Image (cartoon, rainbow, N blue to C red; front, side, top):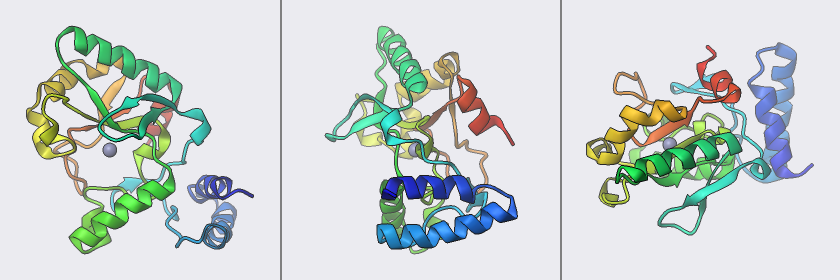
Length: 212
Ligand SMILES: [Zn+2]
């Protein structure tokens, strides 16, 4: 089985609370570790360090909403991508830019980003305040993205983004297009991330983010 399929099955199995399926998750963790040459970083529980487990959307389903700074395209599932483009155009008509910085991520990219943060901060617990562990990121869903203000790039993915016109515009208008902020100032363990927004404007988004 291709590596990606193994991991996709693994995530689906491991978020299941049924004991039988949980055992299947354990088997697949071993399988994934052997097949893909990685340490198991996939979910074994519903939450980890305050982050919920999410299945990884298929890479073949996400579409580009543009590139920003890097050569890598930022991708979302089609409904979220269409809503994002409509929102971006509406903001642009008011003279406000919304730059897509990072959208859909597979397990490997998330693991890479998480490991970098662990190295920098010294522990997984501290790292998880800023970056979700692999298997627990909203970015896996294809319905979440990080955005920036193209006129204030020094605040990309930093707390000062909340002082930008883009953030101000999003807090007033994002909901009209189905987008909401994921990590608020009142959030317990996870830091306030003014740049991280998720799409709840369709049934999939509602199911993933608004079902307890
Ligand atoms: Zn994010």
